[in-house]
Image (cartoon, rainbow, N blue to C red; front, top):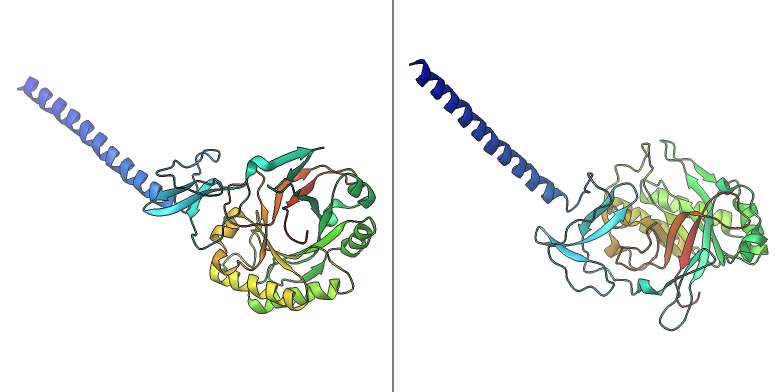
Length: 322
């Protein structure tokens, strides 16, 4: 009797273990399904350096992978904070025509040579953080243009408009050194009226100068802190972006939009921004982003004679008028 009870108990333990294993498998499998579904619009937090697996690769003129995820076309992008991620492929948005085997490097600077032999321009973007700049040395180092921070709106509740304390001296000195100059404004507008206010603020500071490069609307995430723009929906931010750019056009300047791949594909509606040039930030060797852009900020760790410390470096791709 005792022996039979022991056998029965042992059998129950084994059955429990087996059941637990299968239950565990079911839980893990269910969890995996949830993770696979959400990985289409979110990132793989486990390994930022690992590209998502491709289910089906489609033809793509830029060489960027277009894959199928949950029955929808997707592209892989890279975000400096979140790593590789997949976002919906936007078929109505024009693709760029760059071929990355045409990238060159000379004297520590990147260039792009198109099929007709036209070479890109090399630029930097600076703010008061760079402090003292010897613009003649910058020009002699091979830099063609500079995009200066004209100012910014504070990301706190008040959203005060501020002029970069080095803006006017930088602009005058850079132009005297023979550099082409454009400007950017770091926006924290939360509605279209504030965006127009920012554009007017830029005009007031720039109207006495001749700009040879665009006026840029800088829209990006505030890292490590909350911001007044955090709760904006893509449709709201897109309208704000358009409001700034259209106002800048009214003042006679060429507008441009600065953002990284994640911001462009998840926080803005690119299908409504095709009339504006894009300044794209991506610190990889070759961009994964497939859509049109005219300028590429390819590093934040550049070193240029005439500037102490590091500086952002940019390529202005060959195009009509530049």
